[in-house]
Image (tube, rainbow, N blue to C red):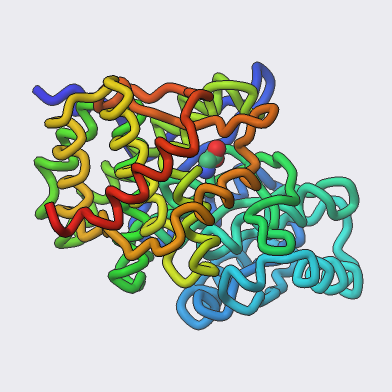
Length: 373
Ligand code: GLY
């Protein structure tokens, strides 16, 4: 019998300290959304759905129609799609919309979209009238397995990713797996990098499960995807419950992100976040091998896993010194040292503050030459 056979994978509860919690609901449609929201707000609440110009034509109508049955009024605000709009100017426009339409402290915001929409809506929820409630409806794989959970919200600032923000927990995360069907293939694969990251850092059994289910995952079998997203979220749940404000172990979730973010910035966000995280994970595994935490075989095994799921393991990184320099601007710095996440083995990550610039350069060189192996 599989260890997961007995587990109800339709709902996960994330505890926030001893007093509060929120549920993540796993469905294959929006049917149950009104019932889930009205459980939290039996008296009709005013709702503003915040979405982006990509998601708006796909799901806004259905979601607002469903919410109208349990709300006193539902309005919609559409952000222009893309990371380049994840900034304070766009946040100001949302504040203005809410003020002009007389939303008050009892307002419920609903983030309908991917990571950018979730992070921005959450930031508005954290700050508008000193805080209003918000629901996450993540429609991308990346948002379903990572950004919609754990309450990190915010915007980019002058080229620095997520530099301005706040911790603000959602009151509900509603995952409709079928939204993954509308996701462009490259976006799905990019989100998968965060799935790999979660398995690598915490759960070897899940890593093996991913290999065993690679066909079903690539065929977008919704039951398999549902289990995959649930298992990923459960890993994140364990980590954020223990360390909600990233004082310690939550930093493990940044596996692949130190060099990943630097590569993302070096290419001026031309490549998708997950593609850069995949490269960052391969680089972290390489450094782990060179520091003799991982064996050579484990390094190549990890690298090949990214290939199996269509993620990049090499890139023409012309100016590696510049990329190393860019890691110094990362939020993950600890008093002048880069807080690097390395692997002891598959399923066991740890924080290491002794990764040198030379070790990072060597890992970037490995990415430059990976195709030649
Ligand atoms: N995405 C990493 C975290 O939520 O901590």
